[in-house]
Amino acid sequence: MDTVNSETLIRWFDRLVNRPLRVVAMVVMFLMMATTLVDVVGRYLFDAPLKGAFELTELMLAAVIFLGLPLITAENGHIAVDLLDSLMPARLQRWLIGLANVLAFGVFAWVLWDKAFKVLRYGDTTAVLQIPYAWLCFLMAATTTLSTLALLLMLFIKGDRLVVRGGH
Image 1 (cartoon, helix red, strand yellow):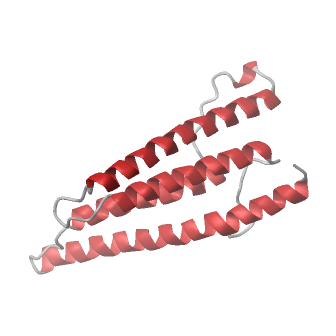
Image 2 (cartoon, rainbow, N blue to C red):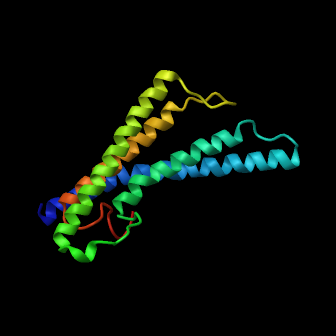
Image 3 (cartoon, rainbow, N blue to C red):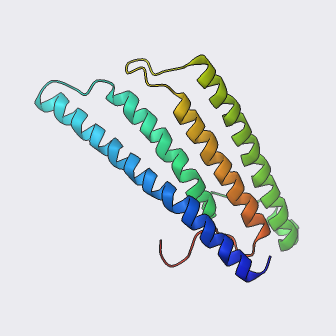
């Protein structure tokens, strides 16, 4: 892929995937902080904790983690261990690592999609507030799929990131 198409693809991914995920993650993080604040104030000042605060925080924490997954992937920010890198040429190394990442994330996404549909079928909910888990499972599957797409795109374009450098 030439540089012009690569830059266009990077800008497209940043605009349509990274920016919306970043905004949603910030909103969920704010709601998680607000929930904790209301729970703590209610608990210690009024002896009336927020019912289900633990469940809400637990769900929002999982959502924030998975909303951040494609963002970290697009920035190539995952932790990597270089054990065998010096034993192979750089070009081969890039392809092998890229294919391994795509395969690992692809399998992870497939397992999460399967789990999401099972949770939807069974109608699993939280214990106290009876919030369905299916939306969270589908979010996890979708964001892992986006991470897989990011890794696949990074494998075929020049550069190692799918974020616009120098600003958001």
